[in-house]
Image (cartoon, rainbow, N blue to C red; front, top):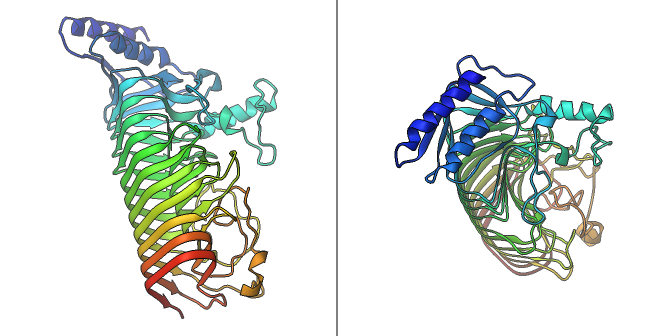
Length: 482
């Protein structure tokens, strides 16, 4: 250990002689992973040294494996992992600490990499950050059961520690000018890359395999402004890229998600479920999705927030359980929110008959009832309609094979489809639905142009059900049935 500390100090002293940013290289030859966070203090000292310099600096991890607990990234510091460098999360739960966001925030505050109210930070390079999440989560579970570290929110039904007890890979709170580029990410014990009230963020060219444990989202963006996610690959056991809003006085605003590949055992791209403030000016385009259990696109406003000015375009989803789920509900909040001005165009989806994520070893919770294939849906609640939705150039292929023996809901009994006003939003939330392509309820202003629905096998249900819908426009809507 002394060897590496001397290297850091010498390089730091040399760089101080020049009016430029500090570069501190940590040599990784001979370093190996282990239970103990052997290298936390070494890397943290290098970050702190760069932070102390007036122009900041760059900490470079050379080829090797570095085992660490929580690291605090600081203003004007770049953490760069060269090819062959692996920052490996310790599997000792005591090596992790958490932080409190400015107010409230999302529900897990521990992470391998933390930053709070920092400016101009970056994580780059061709190396890897591996959270060692499954072993870490199981160690947390063991400490709970022997009574050494009790999780007060332990999930008894599913026999696992709550999200709040498990570290994320990244948690960046109230930071500005953030750049994450090139690195490979894997194996968080909880959510992966989590941003809370950050602004001016660029996430590009990352590859994230996050299937080690439960609640393994890929990227979570909470009440942030001016965020661009581009050219990324996400394979996650929970939502792929998820926008959340936990603050009633904040929004996700000016968010761009472009040219990404997503595999998910939940939804590929989702707004919600947390939706207290809301989502404005969101652009999602050029997304390729496959083997995804829930929705290709889910837009959910259920906590009193606002969803407005959303554009989704150029989406191709294969072997995906649901094409589109748009929901205005009233789970929490003083009053229902609003969901309006959503345009979805150039969407192609193939929905299978069986479960699309069957090959996952970690899968999202199964639907607790056997059911006919479930259509896309756009739904509000009585007295609060979804407004101004445009569907253009849409093509969805459905499997058919619905059976009257499974469920039969004639149009004269639409009241049997429950409103589920306060229920957690999910495309399966209504149970059986009386249409095979699209179910629309409590909507004002729906335009469908150049929309094509294919049915691969027989289905006794009609393609569409419109219940309490005003200002419906249908142009060039084609149905192809067996």
